Length: 272
Image (cartoon, rainbow, N blue to C red; front, top):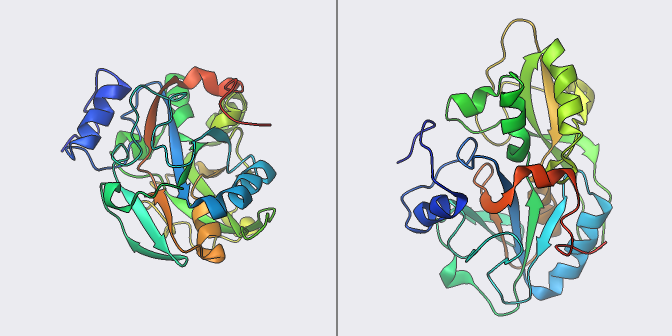
């Protein structure tokens, strides 16, 4: 399996490795400068409410693209993307219960399914690294730590639930610069939603994330929290649709779009 040091010639090459099940790990550090995306796939009957949930909660759910019913491609995001195969690990939810984490969902695809690609914080990590700001989970080949918070999202139809955040520890001076850098990436969750004391947003033990790997927090660090695209998974667990498919946390769809495009709306990709 590829390691943290593995590089790929292009996002398409990485997707080919994923499709061949030669890569099934977290994509942090593997997408180069490509925009990465969270994924939610729902039956047509549930799609309208979820679209409104995304529009009501643009920080955790920045819409990059919405697929046509039954179509597993997202042509505005990449050449020959096939959502049935091109995510390294998926999650299958039935009645709001997580049942399995396969590497392929072709057998589950239905003709009314609608796909939603949402921006991902991995897309701004290269900008942080270029600025000399440590992204320790990426350097270690680990998954980013993610936490359920006490902050509510705005409900829409059947979907509601807590805000989920990702966290990157860093020295205070770097945190200030990170705020300014990430504000340029609204389609990748933008600026952090919280800095400092995790208890203020309902996180009881920062060393025990709800998703991902434990953090590497060092002396002088402060925790910096971003809205996270795992938020819809908490909403799916609460809404309990008959069937939902998402990415496994940290295992993203890597698009052909340069991450630098995350500083502006992708014209024609999503409504609003």
